[in-house]
Length: 173
Image (cartoon, rainbow, N blue to C red):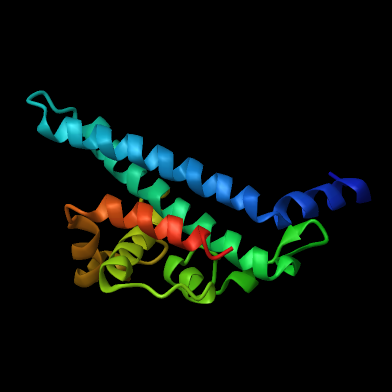
């Protein structure tokens, strides 16, 4: 479908606005909180529904990853609005192959990560595919003990770290 030059301009204005990306980050963070809370409730329940529990767990971490991703993209777009031009987002300017590599995005946005934040970002990067797809693009990910161990383990302060990190990234705009 062909779009008009006015529509291209509208898209460029919308996508170049860091607040568009911040809204998406905050929305995903709110969904992650709800899903993770529900997963916790189900884990403690005597009549745990496996599908609901695992679905909330995977989807919660997926949305947490999307929150970090959109927050970092907000920073990058605030610094370089030409990431969006001619009615398209140039994902190559986000770093990485697909524009979804969270560690690359945080590094491109010059966000210094603590060890705990780095572990969380690495974990969330795995959930960006695990929450969306049944299998990874390549088999080696499933046999990477470090990545899979990190994806399975959670710390008690993980959600606090997540919220703090997203807020800190957004504050860089």
